[in-house]
Image (cartoon, rainbow, N blue to C red; front, side):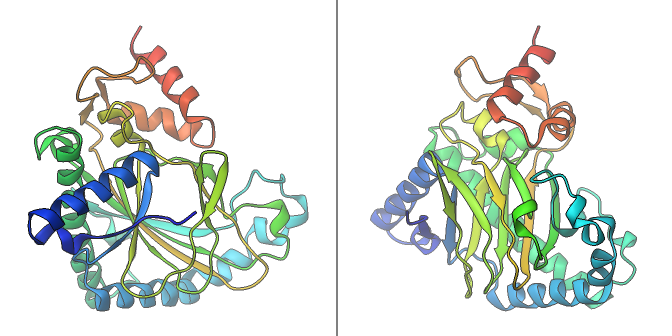
Length: 300
């Protein structure tokens, strides 16, 4: 199966090119829940600089700690399939930032990250506008539904593992929030998305492409027209894999609901912070069961 690749250059073209690009985006959101983007407005040189930072920061600050961790030293005792083989940390960007928790990140690198995030947020808001229009809503509907947004980035490295059969890099789950924009490793694969009954591998990718997936809140707002996709990360015995995922999510006090009358399995209206609390307890479980239990709890 070929994962959709959408060239956003068409949005700036004539009416025919724009209509074609919008249709491609609609089909990707409706039938896949994940896709590649080209000509998306995020500067390729900045993307490469950010990747270099992630690799260097891991080598200097995380690699030794990871291999000295209880998981790495006691892998034979791991609960098979129930642990995640990853070295990861998160930086919040908006509405407030926790960058002060990372004093080792230099001022020039902070400026680099700020520039990257500004461009990534602009892309997420463009996608939100296009999704809204494709759903027959006004252009600002999804942005308003997620407002005020929170933006954060998970920086993850998946080291080579001597016993990949007993762990996942990250267990299967959907993402809780809105729109996720990812930079992927150029050489090492491992990310897999579930489409129907089949796991679709996301191949390593160089160049300037970014990868996008849809979170649970887009599924709710769309009333199931767009669906968040289950995904996981497998690890191997050779190479380490970089992943950098920026989450454009609702604020914790944002009130989320289907835009129109929706199938009965969808909750809403509800406070996103309440959903997030429920999600953290059920992240690696079945999404439909999560929606059902959350609706029962908050909509009696």
